[in-house]
Length: 324
Image 1 (cartoon, rainbow, N blue to C red):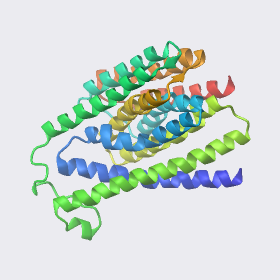
Image 2: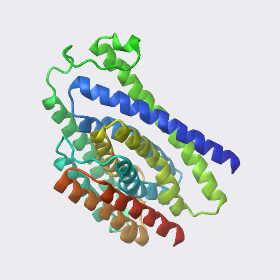
Image 3: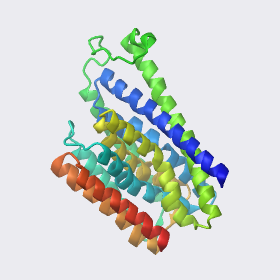
């Protein structure tokens, strides 16, 4: 267990390093391409930080551990709102976003409800998996088209100079800087992936040694571990005052977990669901989703009180899952 604890600490360090590179690189790319940071958060950052969920869930499904895969998807969506958003905003409130996210909120809420409706017959069929997978393709296409409409002279040399602290980068042209920051973003995603894998393996090893069941591991340890990239990215985002990247990451990650993770898994494997997951875990996920939907649609920002409630709700959910 001592080795697993050391690996867990190493994984956390890699998560911090990867998140710093991802947020720093992606935010600068958004500035130079004149694309809203929230769109970058909804796409590059969200898909990058959700890659652990995809890999872990797909491998678990391939190995026949469907409970781990489904628990990871649902648990990660709850963790993204309750843990990632809740804890990040406690550190730094978001009084108001500079970008309207109504459409994205509608998408997130509608997709969550549809996912639950699909699950009510106790399975996600191949056809339903195809429908969900087509959803992520459609959503991404819409965002790309929207970003192209928003851009104006993206590679113009009139972009305000971006100081990096590295003279060799500061002296480069805009196009060259985009390449450098693109590599930094990609490196951040890769490091986040390795960091989350090390952390997940260590945490799961500790849980197994303690005799914890698979569904609990999926809903808690694995879901928490695969949400660590989002958490690390969220904390770094609020520290750097990149609030739109944080919100975009949470919404985009939740969409990707359902459409881009559960969709392909259902399309390839199909899977069954227990009554407990359908009538307990799904409703909890929807409560967190609807609360976020109402607050952001109404206030377009989040304060410390609500974030504390979300975080407390997440801790309460974890406590209930572990003790029952």
